[in-house]
Image (cartoon, rainbow, N blue to C red; front, top):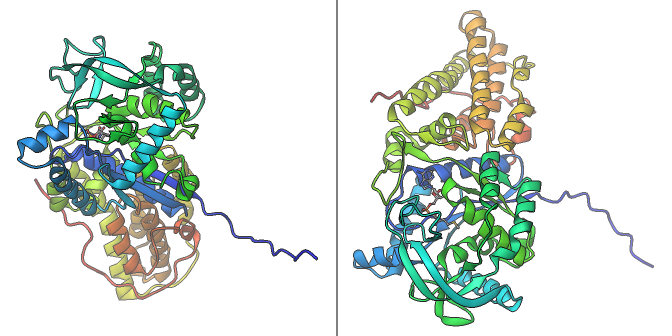
Amino acid sequence: MPQNKTRSFKTKTKNFQISTAIDYPSGKFHLGHAYEKICTDTFARWKRLKGYNVHFSTGTDCHGLKIERIAKKHGKTPLEFVNEISGGFKDLSKSLNVSYDDFIMTTEERHKKVVAKILNGLKNKGEIYKGYYEGLYCVECETYYTEKDAENMCCPIHKNALEKIKEESYFFKLSKYQNRLIKAIKDRNLVWPEKKKKEILNRLKEPLKDLSISRENVSWGIPLPFDKNKTAFVWVEALMNYLTTVDYPNKMFRDFWPATHFIGPDIVWHHTVIWYSLLMALELELPRVVVHGFINLKGEKLSKARGITIDPLELSEKFSSDSLRYFLMRNIPFGQDGDFSEKALIDRHNNELADKLGNLVSRVSGLIEKTGIEKTQNTIAGKLNIEKIEKLFESYEFDKVLNEIFAFIDICNEYIQEKKPWETKDVKVLYEVADSIKAVAILLWPFIPSSCERIAEQFGFEVGERTFDKIKEPLKISKIKKREILFKKSSI
Ligand code: ME8
C-alpha cells in the first residue's frame, strides 16, 4: 500500500539575486562608487524587509592592462596591488553599512573555473572562432571603440588617446544575436529606466560586429582554456562574476538566477548587448539591468582617472553613514545624474533627519518616560500609504518613497503639537505616535539602517529582515526611555 503523503504547507522562500558592478581596483574609490553600493543596498534591504532570501554581491574587477600598468607604477605585482585596493573597497562597504553577502574578486579560483567552463562550452557550441582583431582600444575603460564612436581618435568618456591594436584573437559571434537582442530588450521589461532602454535600442540600429574576446599581450588575466597563450578579454570574464557568485551551474544558481544588476550609465552596453548575447548563447535567462545616474561635482562626472573626486569615507565620518545614505537617496531622483554639494547634505541632515525624525523620536520617548503610555487604536496610521510606498519601491522611485515617509513624520509631529500630551497627560496619544514611529522605522530601515535599529531598540520593536508585516501589528508596550539624540545638527 502506498503511504499516505503528508501535504506540506511550507511556502517556497522567495529568492532574489542583486549585484553592483565590480569596481576596477585601480585607485582609491570615490563617492560615485559609494553611491552605487548604497542604492543597491537600499533595494537589497527592501527585498529582505519583504521576506525575500537575498543574495547581494559586489566586488572588484581585477584583471587587464590598466591594472597591470598601475601596479607596475606602484612597484607591486598586480595581485599584491589588487588585494590591497580591494581591501579598501571592502572597508568602504563596511563603513557605509552595505550588507553584501559576497565580495567577489575576479582573481579567485572559483571565478577562473566558471570562466573556463563557460568559454569551453561556447567554443564547443561553435559560438567562438579564431580571427584577427584590428582596432582602437581605451585602456581606462578596457573597451574597444570604432572610429565612428571615438572622438578624434580619443575615448568619448576618458578623452585620452585610443591605442591601435592588431593581433590574433578569438571572436564571439555577437552579430548573430542582433535581432534577438532587439526583440528581448524591446518586448520585455529588462532595462530600467525607459530612457536607457531607448538609447540601447537606438545603438542597436547599427549592425553589430563580432566581439574580440581574447588578448595576446595582456598576461594579467584568465588564460583561455583552449589557447593558453591568450587571456580572456577583461569585460567578458568580468561579467561572468554574476554567475560565479551564485555558484553556476549548481543548486544556488538554479535557486537565484536571474539577477538584478544595479550599474552606472557608462556600462549599459556591456551589460545588455554583450552580457545578454553571451547569456543567450548559453541558453540562460536574462537578468534585469537597473541604471542609476552619475554623481557629479559642479556638473563634472567624478572620475579617478581625471582626479575629480569626493571621499565618501570623509563624508560618512563627518556626518554619519546614515546621513550620507539618506542624502544620496533623497536628493537625487533615482536614474538621474545628481550634483553633490555638502551644503545640500547639511540642509537635509539638519532639516529632515534632525528636526523631523530625530525630534519626533526624542520628544515622544521623553514624554513616555515621564508620563507613561497606554495602548489604544492608532488613528493616524491610515495616513501612511503603505501600498503606494511598496509600488514606489518596486519602481525604484526611492526619493518618492522618502517623501511619503517624511510626509507621515510631519503628520506625527503635527498630531503631537495639536494634542499637547504634555499638558493633557493623554498617554494614549503617545501610544499612537510610538506605534507610528514603529512603521516609520521599519520602512526607513533600507535607507538608514543604523538609526532605525537604534529607534527599534529604544521602543522595543523589531526592524530588518522580514519585518514588513509587523508594520500593521500593534506596538507591544515596553519600557521606553529617552536616549542620546539620533542626529546632531551640523554647520559648514
Ligand atoms: O566599469 N557616479 O568599473 P568602474 C556614479 N569594472 N557611479 C559611478 C561614477 C559616478 N561618478 N563613476 C563610476 C567598471 N561609477 C567595470 C565594471 S561589471 C562586470 C564591470 C560606477 O570602477 C560605474 O558606472 O569604472 C560602474 O557602475 C561602477 O561605478 C564601477 O565603475
